[in-house]
Image 1 (tube, one colour):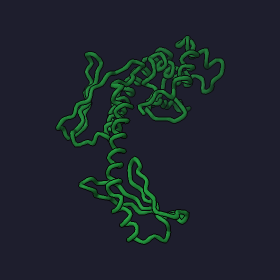
Image 2 (tube, rainbow, N blue to C red):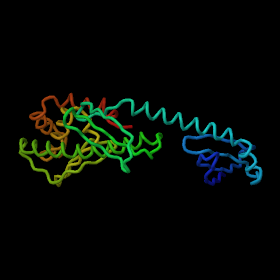
Image 3 (spheres, helix red, strand yellow):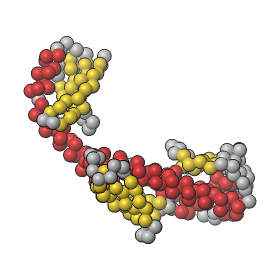
Image 4 (cartoon, rainbow, N blue to C red):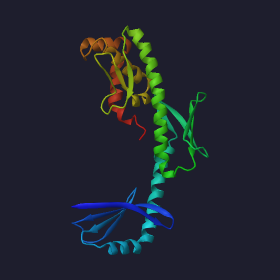
Length: 248
């Protein structure tokens, strides 16, 4: 049986999330420095005094290794995301720059000239949180831009294909890139907006074609082929590269 208790340690002004876990299988006190907290595993019979003494004796070691861990996490985050300095839109890289400012909110500005983005990060955001903050604001921007682009293409191709859809929603579906209901409601996966434009066109045409054929019959694919002659290549591109359409 395992019981845990979470609190905070304050060592030389550094606040460290701290957790005590009692484990009936443990024979001695032990300590682990994790990404988000320090954990002490405690034998069932250990007293509060023994725990306190254990932490006190090891406090310099805790602080030293906690700071090392946070430094590694910060470096990893910057290498993983910030060093790339670009993300895809319709298969084309959109470069971005980050600036630390005195603004209170994270803001993003898109410049049509040069198709580039500037992201302003408040100085109060810890460096180890930069990656997640950037991912969040870029995803929001991509969703807005994606909705605009998909809406335009749905309107364009629905006229060309002589079909009418009811509503359109942008979603994040884990296993599907799009869907079309019998009521004419179309859903498209926002992540697809990072794919090349030919792939995006194929997805739009595919879902609109379901307004004529609610299946994947030969007639359906022939209808798709009228407006996307290389649909097989675009479908295969998604199968091979779909997992790469992510900001993680």
